Length: 600
Image 1: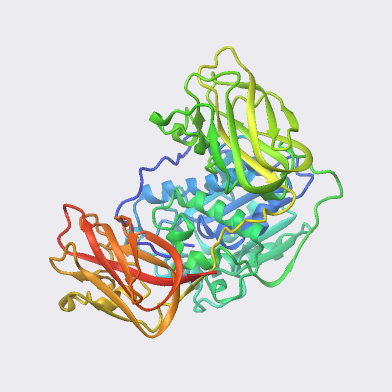
Image 2: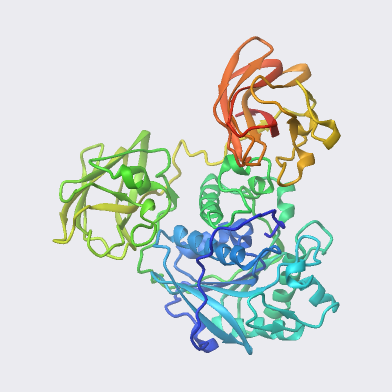
């Protein structure tokens, strides 16, 4: 996607680069692809999960071999730590889609005379990610100072003769980049090829990197003689088109993207955080461009060692309890359903662990209404000592299903059974290894052949802020930080763009911002963004409506993320936000943004 984010510092990078001699291109040829082979070629590390997600999820869960090529590093002009961390995002997303442990083996491969980085999923090596690491060109296509103001667009137009990878491993001319794409197709032997928008114009509002990659892949697939399907996918412009994904597809897409976002500090990582950002709209849409063609998988039973997953994840909405949990180390029962299949020796905070629990330990999920369930996916704690060697699933109707020994490395064990309606599910451990001290689970996923009746992944909200006049106790017109900036549709401020926020100089508690409409509006939600600097923090407030009613506001996210305050619907011609408590370091209270909404 590469929206040229404003990132002061990136998280410490944990992406690895192999230093052994590069493997030959033939090492990219996957095996066991009886369900078909898909090659995705995109520009940035989130393009596939944002713009091709429904197709990607279907391919992965159908047991197809999937290779995805990221042409740029997605660096956005930032130092190496940012793009190195960002490369971990697709790995987390793909592993999550498959319900497998996020463990990958990295190497380098020589393709078309150039060295590229490769990561293969340990639990299913038919899934591989290839990185060329060329510079991100930015939304204007002009590149960034850190990479010499060079870009794919400039390479494609002949403004520059060559383009060097950000890690210094390779330099490409336009001809050699094209031949590298040819060599990748020859090595992977795809039956379907997917890319970005190869039809639109550079100046149509989509990212120039998207169009250049799409055009190069389109040309390469025309040279690729093996029969194959081909599709390009529209990027930024889909937000202006109707939502067209199903609830299940939106759920899968958002879960994959939010896993990716854990490794990209420049994007939003949840529905509320994405509100009023392009990602919010992208998550419910997918549009192919041109005239896509498809190649059906061979007429054979797919070979999938992990078993095809049932269509819908209905884990969400369950209340989770356990016989025991390790709250001191964050290994609570809820971590078994957090969407992250990991644990010690990886991230121990992503797993549920008991305190001294062995046989007889249990984890229970309860839903407010019954779910139709026909599949449970289980991941043991991935350490080599604490092992579940047998368990039982117990449903609300009293029926049971036996669970065999779980893989000791934390990979997925899929238990399939005749569908049944149940409002609860309990897994009780019946046997453990002799080395077990604290039994637990890295992850548990409950699946259904049909969508959960209460599945609402993306709340439908109508913004009624438009037409309001914003006034404040006081503001800072000298720096452009007026009351109106709190409803300008841009949730930003210092250390980003200081002119996009409202500030009350020397204001602390008792400062008020009022939105007034000429006619009354129905409202049940207010979204607040604190000033994003880490010194001026609102720790409490009150909403007061024209009818005299009030709603308490909790502490706002100190980094400027969205804080959503929901309340019973009321009709009012004004709403006033008043600060009641602030952090000790606050000097100038204010807001980056305030929006008033109706949910429904």
